[in-house]
Length: 74
Length: 256
Image (cartoon, rainbow over all chains, first blue to last red; front, side):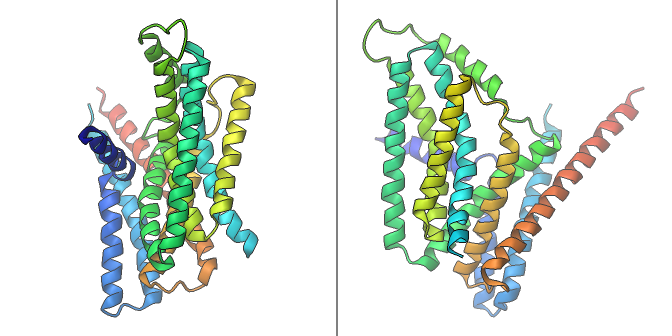
């Protein structure tokens, strides 16, 4: 049973986190921050702009990180 | 508008399914050719039934039980994470910073791995063929199931999403039977780029709706988001290529 649970967990980890954990953590952080900002009064129209911009920035950061990791490979 | 909703669910499911089914076909062909077709095809059949059950159970449960605002926030979040993974990898591959998926090489490696396995029993099931084919189709198919359930449920179009995936499956199997070798010429990275863009676009839109974001042009905002992400992604490909070229030139200049 433990083996199956471990395999199930490993599958979902690989599926959602994989080799780019910053995308998993970053996406959740962005959504949480936008939710909090809307709760304290961020205008909903502006929130959309911030959300789309943040997703683009996250992609850019992940690409830059991948390139840095690639350059450190032997 | 109804046709648009159908397309929204069916197209990403179709494109993502083509990519995943091509990868599954490589595994199935390698196992079938080197070991035993009967056990391989039984493994494929059982995996397809399992996937259909997963889509049916989870798709129906999600549509019936989860409120649409919660569904769109959770599904949107998952799609942003998953879509960005596909998109970032596709950008890196398009720019030459990451090796492209090579179905011929994977096929050769799979054939070699199968040849290392114990010989096939003279009669009855070959459980190695069954297990490898079942696992390959189930794992590749899980990604399809995820996209079908999330897109279908959020767009309220589970049927078209299933149809899109089924059509992709029929197409890949038909071409696979016709050519009887891995479909190495399918532009997998281009498809992954498009699917990554779509997942990220819809994920951002639905997650935003779930959070209470006010999109300025309602559903038409999807097209604006798609254009913004497309332009951003193409610019990223160019930037990465320029950086790689710059690094290569610097290395050449450093050679005495």
